[in-house]
Amino acid sequence: MWVRELAVSAPGKVILHGEHAVVLGKVALAVALDLRTFLRLRPGAEGRLSVCLPGVGVRRSWDTPRLRALRGRIAADFDESKSPSAEQLDALREFAGIAAGASAPESLATLAFLYMCLAISAKYGDVPSVDIVVWSELPTGAGLGSSAAYAVCLAAALLMVCGAISCPLQEGESTARWTEEELTLINSWAFRGEQVIHGNPSGVDNAVGTWGGALRYQAGKITPLKRVPTLRILLTNTKVPRSTKVLVAGVKEKILKFPAIMNPVLDSIDAISQECQSVLEAMPANPSPEHYPVLEEFFDINQHHLNVLGVGHPSLDRLCQVTALHSLHSKLTGAGGGGCGITLLPPDTSPLAVEAAKQDLCACGFECWETKIGAPGVTLHCCSSLSARVLHELAQS
Ligand SMILES: Nc1ncnc2c1ncn2[C@@H]1O[C@H](COP(=O)(O)OP(=O)(O)OP(=O)(O)O)[C@@H](O)[C@H]1O
Ligand SMILES: C[C@@](O)(CCO)CC(=O)[O-]
Ligand SMILES: [Mg+2]
Image (cartoon, rainbow, N blue to C red):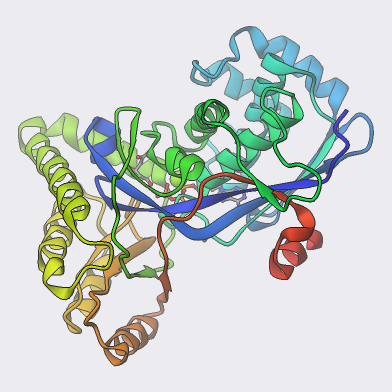
């Protein structure tokens, strides 16, 4: 029986280059953001599993004997090496009263929760009687990896409750991290959660959520970048809603329709990621302005490529035009179709210019904020060490 009250957090991410192409085996460069998702785990009433997800308006609770019976009916092949099957997901939808094909955030979040609970408990232990709340600083469905941060937090908490990974937090410590081997297991299960939400994820987002920092990702191979300079980045949320699942499926369709036209675009995106990696690794820790023009050109070229793949949006064109008026370069990040864009802020950009760009972006109805990149990956926290804001949000639920 689980007896401690703890919290788990995982960061969102920004993809510098390689979104969409990475789903088809090309290289992506991604960095962890200093915006995180937090999960509070505490013992629940005996025989009840409860979940509260204020970001998507979900509050559900189930009897564990019913979940155990459901698990028995569909557990034959729950494993971190296997994708969720259509039959398993159909059974979970029917159990939770979710219509077939429902893609609303609350439906996908509930389905991923149930899948991960049943799959992880089937492999490592019993359905736990716990109370879980997940709250995020990340906007949902805006290209910053909110689905992966959610799946990483769930994987870590559920694996810990079921005894598949340790509880590394010693008495008196405020935070702790897991071993490489444990992180690998968390990442594998988070990928399965992402599959429930995304359909066909590459795995880059859950890798950044698990390991944090800055990494190169290609076909499941995760390589931390040797050296990442301090990059100043402005993040802008166009607030145009979109679904990663739908956008990824649209790109696949386009490639199947025009392979000879689209494959060279994917190859060019791959080359941008690789060149950008070389440039970043050759830059000094605190780069000077002359290092930036090449990074800016990569942003411009990739933004055009992403438009060719069909994942642009008039709001993102606007974002790029507005920042260009201030001599700043931007591209979409994540799945596109709305959501967020990133703008490079070279060190010689005056505070006045940044402020003016922000004002113009806000006048378009966008929200923007400067951010730090390279945050730590999935982390275990003693609840009392969380900030007052996070504690407040988790306690409201
Ligand atoms: N805080 C949260 N609580 C519960 N579910 C969440 C939360 N954040 C995200 N999700 C789930 O993730 C889905 C959004 O995932 P989606 O992949 O479309 O966007 P994203 O991950 O924010 O962007 P991208 O994949 O482009 O980085 C939501 O529909 C919801 O099911
Ligand atoms: C669009 C995509 O490349 C990035 C979403 O953050 C999808 C994926 O890699 O799973
Ligand atoms: Mg996502």
